[in-house]
Length: 481
Ligand code: NAI
Ligand code: MG
Image (cartoon, rainbow, N blue to C red):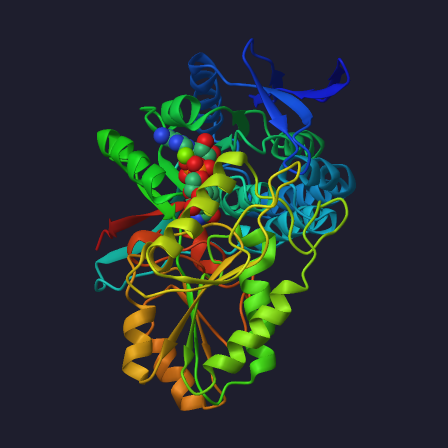
């Protein structure tokens, strides 16, 4: 619960409908200033057990699973309304703990509300099939909820990513244990208020905070969970999949990316520059589907390069409260990692055109950075998770595909051309779960999203994602002649 202790806000875990404190605290700091924003109780292993037991009991009592579908729809609409009413308070909290612009922090609550509305609309439309087996049999399928869904949330969009997995899980009748990100847990804790006010059954939604290596690891290794949803780094995803092997628990893995835009010679350069700005600088590049590489035809390469430099160099860098274009990187560790990657790139022969070093001021600021690099170097192969755009040149269509597809990742991709056939051919050739043509980040809640290769598997968002949260049961009935 939100209480003030020595001037800072303190939050607790939310288990079985109750606020539960712990002796161990996690301190949450403001990345724009380094100041303490608040503290939160770190869930103990015993509290992980309590949360899983509460979800299990709620499922065994079938409080969500047997709720009439239209009642589940109404419950999700109530949650949406409650989340929307938290936008001002929650937006401020999220802006302070995460550093993103206040308007975007408030926008996460709006987006979260819309996830609940979208999946509310599906709650009473989860329909099976009837399968013909001849006159003597009736055969049909039903979708049943898994039971207990464990959801591990990252820090870049904590509120909207909770909603992305929680809303379809509840719509399908599951009970959920969420592990919030230890770096930005406060706005997620506030979501528990929405659950209480919307009268979500106790145990249907539990929210734990804690570190990945203990609280997160204890949750995903728990013998009584039925499904895992994870968004975050490849290494953590691999460790979670290893834990899931023990009890044979299905996973949805939304891992990182190194997504590329391919710019053909006939592209509309206004669209290219606007897309690179949004794609690379949104959330300071701390986005799994960021435009991380731009692969440009040699005929227009110099022009694109100059226009990118002039666009990126005019962006303001500052606090989210001040609505700067580029806001802080979440932690010193992340900032150091980004800067080190930029420096190593130059050691490997890359040409830094803009930015490249952290700003010498309080807080964790990385300026917009543009680097020309070879396709096989670290900066062009590995996720940076910062405002760093890698620029590369191509000559033939095949060369563009080879560079674009030449990483271990495949989350999203982009094509820029006025030629529809070329756009479609390229969209099909690019190895990615989603392709944008002449823009970046099109779509949203209703468009399926997910990766290929080390970007993961399973699709979030859209109608398709609901089926992550159900399993199919086939029932065959022999009729008496
Ligand atoms: P991470 O993948 O370690 O953390 C994501 C979540 O997983 C957090 O809630 C964390 O507590 C939890 N976690 C960590 N270890 C766990 C374990 N063994 N078992 C269960 N849960 C565990 O990401 P981190 O360390 O914050 O960032 C490192 C890099 O990961 C970033 O530089 C970025 O490249 C990538 N990343 C990608 C994200 C995406 O949206 N795809 C989001 C966050 C990070
Ligand atoms: Mg980690």
